[in-house]
Amino acid sequence: MNLFDLQDENEDSLFRPLADRMRPRSLDEVVGQDHVVARGKILHSAITSDRLFSTLLWGPPGCGKTTLAGIIARETSSHFIQLSAVLSGVKDIRAVIETAKEQRRIRGRRTIVFVDEIHRFNKAQQDAFLLHVETGAIVLVGATTENPSFEVIPALVSRCRVITLNRLEEEEIKILLERAATDRDRGLGALNLVFPPEVLGQIAADSDGDVRKALATLETIGVYASTRQGSESSEGSDFVTPSRTITPEDVAAATEKKALHYDKSGEEHFNLISAFHKSLRGSDPDAAIYWLERMLAAGEDPFYLIRRMVRFATEDVGVADPGALGVALDAMEAFRFLGSPEGDDALFQAAIYLATAPKSNSVYMAHKKVKKTVEATGSLPVPLHIRNAPTALMRDMGYGRGYKYAHDHKDGYTPQEYLPDKLTRQRFYLPTERGYEALIKKRLDAWIALKKSGV
Image (cartoon, rainbow, N blue to C red):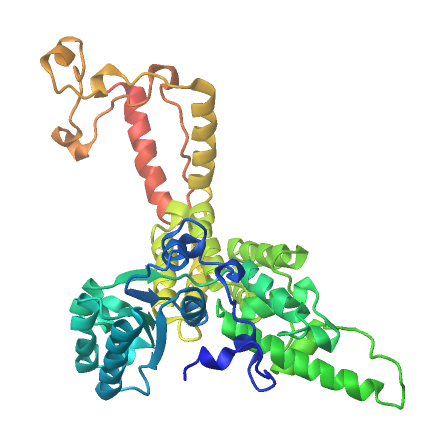
């Protein structure tokens, strides 16, 4: 008896969690992971042709590893056995191998062994699979949330195909939530509840890519709302309970989380990110971190906010503080390493730094100006004196002739034209007198004066 034996469609599902009831039962029901399960992709082909190979499914919680194992159990003709790395030992593994040998000898069919959380097996337990995977006595399918390179012995990794499953996108999770909310047999459809798109979006955002977590939240909200609905209509009426629309306040009450007015794809999203960006530009760190927290508390993707700060570092700070870009990128790496909530402070540190940094949009404006010039002037030829001259023919044609090597001159600079002839002395980058750019401006002004004097 294993997990998938318990999922008999005729079995009373009263006590099974919604996430378990709503597991896709075929490849056609799977949402996401198209890079491996779409028609023609590696895992789809292996399952539908019943020629599965030993595989390690690596991905974050709630991305569909166990679901894919269940589909393998249903859609292949192989004998299927499940082991839990938490509960099983070497003795259990040996028993499974004996069963696999018996299946091959008596019934002439392969055995697929699914090991959930395979990274929890110790070295000896993992070693016990090696010979049998190599000889084909079993097809091993392991699921892990940890990098197999570190948590699975190299010998076993080399005998398996590692398939990486991705964190599901919010839109993909919303599809699964909508399916669960309306399915009358396995889902919550019989509860007569209406889940608007913005509510499903809120649940998907809070799930952090974990479908199991999203469905658990949906079920909690469904129980909460249907209980309220029942109490509100239990006044002796014989009429059918009318449908009830779930609100963000219902979500907040059911999950004990304060509902913030925030639609990540609507006007409020753009209002808040605008307020955040303008507070940074206006050098107001208090306002900046207020809007930052507003968005985080409402479920905004932290990496979206980090991307906005990286953009701000180049667009609104630029060379006025060359370290600003590094601070923003360091915040991204720190958050990626620590996750939430430990890594949240890295975002706030970056926001405060950017808000208090000297401001300049000179890099942004220079980019716009040079882009417009290139579009208008096309492919102007490179001046001969700064062309590369690797051959005698090129040198005879004047390539590189008259080039002045800057390091041979005082202060590492000598007046010389580097732009095409039609753009001589054109200026794109115009530094301000703020922050580090003040030093750059002084340096450039001196060089430009030397050019004009003809020295």
